[in-house]
Picture 1 (tube, rainbow, N blue to C red):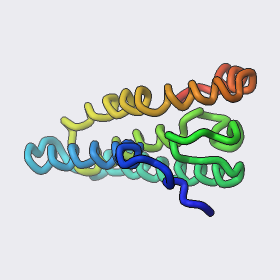
Picture 2 (picture 1 turned 90 degrees about the vertical axis):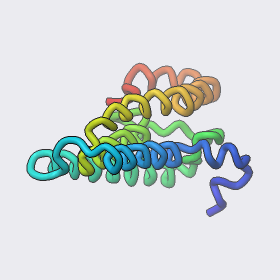
Picture 3 (picture 1 turned 30 degrees about the vertical axis):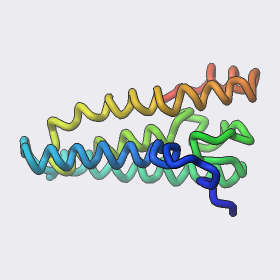
Picture 4 (picture 1 turned 90 degrees about the horizontal axis):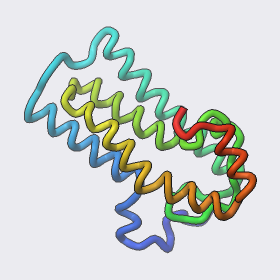
Length: 158
């Protein structure tokens, strides 16, 4: 399999969703280190955190398998060869971005980074503006009627 990142500029390599997720996780870790607040995980909070992280990982794996099955790129800056509407993509148009939010929320809860939970909607906004809207515009141009049907049938997030 060819390197999916080949041909991306240095800026595009830094402007990938996992890099944004890691940056937001770093902010959350810094917050809990410098300004600890609230309980760390345990009991119900620990279960919720574990469920969010585990669910996020499962979503990423299921989405990745669909990308492999359909032989199209997973890289947001590249043109998709196929409009994927099967598997986890039947439930959400953006399972990996949803997983990123779940991972962020889960780790923040696990760490007890309560102040940093405000980062979850901020990351959601970044993902929509930087990746989802441009991706959907490319898909809309390339797959016209098929994407219009898919968009009507499947929600962006849940």
